[in-house]
Length: 246
Image (cartoon, rainbow, N blue to C red; front, side):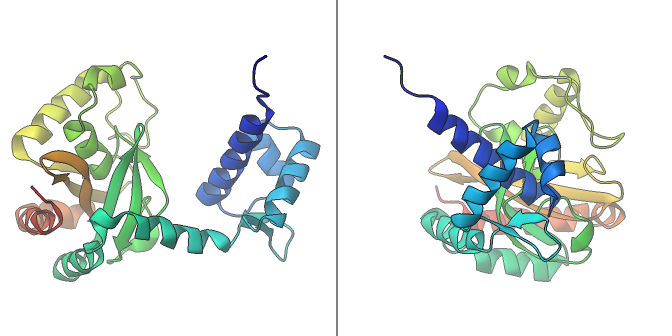
């Protein structure tokens, strides 16, 4: 007799709701139901259960938002990644020397997940923040991950063309093959307004025992990153050496 699929369905819907609130911010229940394609009574029941678990809470205006318990869970998740235990000092040093926002990301499926950052100038306009993700075809962290992760490139490119963030987003398989080749050749990725207009980023791979583990990247005003690319890249590579082992 097959296992009851309902527990997995509930977990998936719970995950979808929390992810939606994390990405879009507080929402009224009706809007959440529309975004997730769920009947409103079902979402009310789900939200009530997550509220009791303190994973979701109701704001003063009645909108749903991510519960504060996630702050403790996020700290625990970062603490469990012992390979990055010394990362914060490196991130802070790099942000101080460049003035840019610095990101530490790790690969999860076909996304780059930000697990830590050090804030620089213009942080309010940047798309990536701790806990958020970017697809592998966009942004410096995503594209350096696409270039250096061990998974087959062509398997990922079967999903092309991908949705564009801006007019500069690389969405076609041929564009991304060329970008991967260029990234591997020079050793770092270049994001030039392909996620957010006016914003650029540079990314380098992080390794442990010669195996790709994540990415270190900086982001800020595209004009500044173009002008200081050589200096910023050198600072990135030096910082990545401090984080990479083997």
